Length: 487
Ligand code: NAP
Ligand code: MG
Image 1 (cartoon, rainbow, N blue to C red):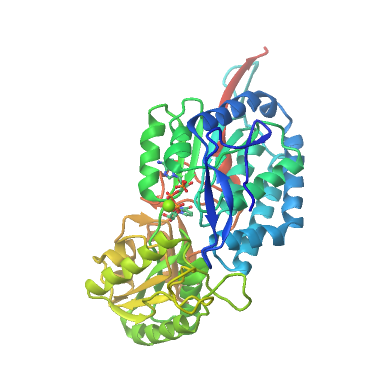
Image 2 (image 1 turned 120 degrees about the vertical axis):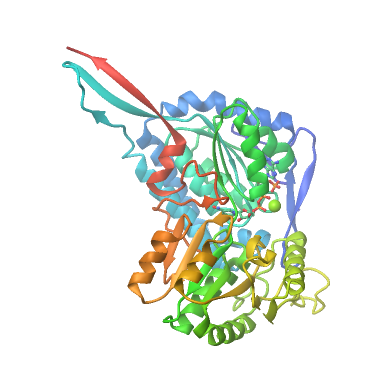
């Protein structure tokens, strides 16, 4: 059994406490390895190392930084199957889903390597003769990346690649449920030649490692993706040092099905959005708002589709949906299913733990839950308001388009939203009036383009900086304005 290490100042090291935590496979309980429980001192050493390495990296020409990112992209490509298998084993999503995520990480490094050849400032017209007025993009400094388990390689990649290309040094803390794929990503950067101290990797609990990072006056930026509750706490800590913060948090994303929609297409998009990655996507569909006149046929077709999905170990071929990530998430899913029933929602499909394919008992090993559909959900119910983060979809019926839009917006979150319709006018009304940072028309609520800005509205985000694509430069750089009198 492997005991993995942390990367601090270019050295692979154990926790100074000698303590570790275990990493398990949610499909069968298999023990996968042990990771260091880093202490406050270990974390501080990683911050110090990043601080020490900052000026060297910031002064490395961006094309030279790009060469390292490009090489990392090629290493991720070469080790793609190995990375995807590790991801499935510790997080549970199917191998096909994991392979897609690893490819995404590869492409993100490729994309930001290209940025190394483009990053620049602005020259501005001057109102004084003999003056040159321009801006410089400088790295923000030491950045802490605190990431969730659900996209444990894509999310670190979409933070790490822009952080590095724009000249920042990094302390990366992965979620404790998915440290292995995070470590493999760091290995790719090390093999690609990232200098000592530029990228540090520290595993351990959010309360200890995470809190040390976000409350440190030596950290210039915190990029966090995770739950609303944890994000709020981070904001409070970081504010004390005026640390720049980016928070991307939960969602309760609607798929809105209008009366002209083709049922088969609406069901396929709902299944992809709601049951893809076991419903454990921040952009997952958890509410389907359907116009009354087609609601019965839609509900029947979705019920059938949910019952036909094959649930199991993501490494087995033919499996379409993996397990919940751990026991606690499984229990959360089952709790919410119970709450929805008590509130009066009507269970159409699923609702229970799936017998474990490996033991047949459902009592040991895998944390499998059935794809679950409720009908008769009212916007005031908890199942319609709170993020479950599992394969649980609630159907909310609407009188007409305006009612559907109002119900879609009757929520504190505003991450992603989609509408299924061929009515051009209503599609654009939806795009303009929905309160969400990502809007889809005739597409699944989940799934993003790496070259486009991403971020939520309302409680889904701190609404400070967008991530991804050309937007990432805003968070990871600071702008200096230079006035040159040369007349
Ligand atoms: P989480 O519990 O909030 O944890 C996220 C990260 O924060 C983990 O690395 C965690 O460490 C760390 N953390 C926990 N407590 C902390 C503290 N007091 N100080 C600093 N860091 C702390 O979220 P999760 O359960 O991993 O992920 C699921 C959530 O992420 C969902 O709400 C989902 O919607 C959201 N999400 C949002 C997006 C988006 O882009 N909007 C994308 C994906 C996921 P430990 O793992 O050690 O606890
Ligand atoms: Mg958590």
